[in-house]
Amino acid sequence: QSALTQPASVSGSPGQSITISCTGTSNDVGSYNLVSWYQQHPGKAPKLMIYEVSKRPSGVSNRFSGSKSGNTASLTISGLQAEDEADYYCCSYAGSNTFVFGTGTKVTVL
Amino acid sequence: QVQLVQSGAEVKKPGASVKVSCKASGNTFSSYAIHWVRQAPGQRLEWMGWINAGNGNTKYSQKFQGRVTITRDTSASTAYLELSSLRSDDTAVYYCAAMIAVVEAFDMWGQGTMATVSS
Image 1 (cartoon, rainbow over the protein chains, first blue to last red):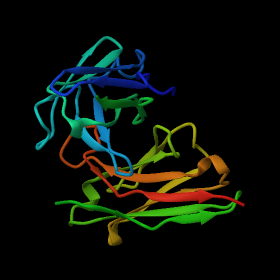
Image 2 (image 1 turned 90 degrees about the horizontal axis):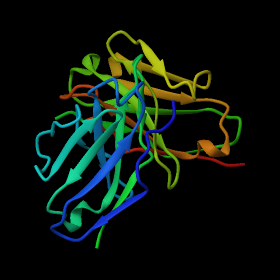
Image 3 (image 1 turned 30 degrees about the horizontal axis):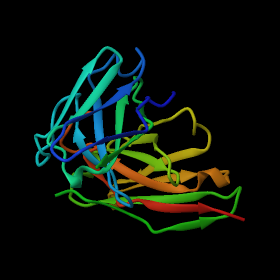
């Protein structure tokens, strides 16, 4: 499986909204509503931010939201804060009990 | 609160094997799906495979098929990842992750184990 495609970097000023895209194929993102998003700060383990395309785990800020259209999923961070500066990865179920991660996006808060 | 605690850092020579453990707290280990994800320095997350801790069934990424073995010991609430025929590009942090309270997503992660392959 090839990695899902994400932009290498996205930046925004505090208070702004940013959107990170995650493009796959009809074999993964396009076929299943099982896209998840992870936040990773340097030297730390990833943290689940969104699952099943748009659901938030308990404790995750409602500033984080997810959506999907066709083969592309998106993560939107509204009201950008300094603590949101991190790497973000999408992940999709890819059938036959396999998963595939995205290429990763570095979010910079200006 | 479930926690995943991994074994310590490893240094191996090319061609050797490495075995990393992932111990789950709590008494519902057999209900978990334990996945393994690796991250080379400065690189992306990469899914390697998973084990059904209840019945021991496994599934591996095609990339690692033939080199990776995931096992578990239910009496010790521990899952294991073994990677053989190590190369320098296997140098990475290896994470175990589990699906505890959500569907098809990893809501619990171990702290990671750094494995370095060097002659």
